[in-house]
Length: 292
Length: 92
Image 1 (cartoon, rainbow over the protein chains, first blue to last red):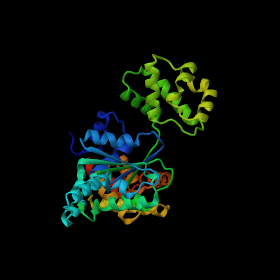
Image 2: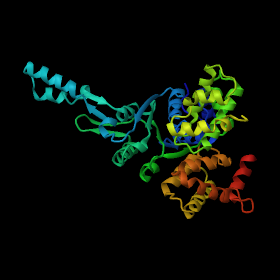
Image 3: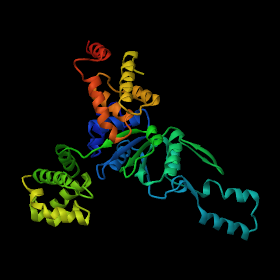
Image 4: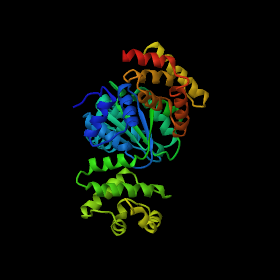
């Protein structure tokens, strides 16, 4: 298992072995995130492979992937640690039945045994044996962002009842954002930054073929061309790379060898996921599937 | 840390970015310099991408960064003297 990449080229090769094609910019940014080391913020449209990058990094370097999925209203307890309330209650009942509820016994209620580790604490403990993926950080609110900033600054977690846990060496941290809102400067300053755009047609074809080697080359090329035309339409949810791969796989499973309007219409659900978008695309199917 | 000549070039480049409106702090300059250590300072791609990763924090700033980079590193009429020397020395 690889320890640490020595060059950008070496990292690119390793990622490719993991089925992930990174261009020079992304590979350089990830390489720096590992060698400095420093958290990296990946921004980009939905489905360009931000989350996947973290997963593959964990895979090829044999590190544990610890994922913190952000959402509106997420609070520090869900991210850091919680007390196992149900077990504490059971313990209290057992103690009082046997009438041994001494001070020490009560103290153990707030010991490691009853502590539920959540992703951030888990990552601090695992240190550089982990890749910490903080997914869709733009969905969390301001306070949570400020709290993240603190954790990412010193990789140290204080639990009043237990003590301070410090990372032996920081984990590799990958944050992703779909840019539904602008993140705070303070958090961004902590991180390296990379914007992932949609890949060129040539690269996307390569990605489809590496992920779905069974799909005929000609079919894959038609699918990629059609997806690129879809992205030019004004869709509410433009298809990401994951959708391109899904569509190619779906067509292949159905035994399709060429993308015609009929076949495209039957399988459109794999690539267009919005009701209004579907109507718009159906109207333009001829054009989208033509001349690929 | 890279040699003094290169550091001077990177610092001047960062100052240009600042002049064009990018919020580049001293800490960012330092990170850029450190980032170049495992990379190849004679490779324009490395100079470009390391700067993009360490000095840019918003997508909207990328066009500004591109413009300043082009002007600073790729203006053949007005080349960066240190860079020419570094290239010559590595080639030797």
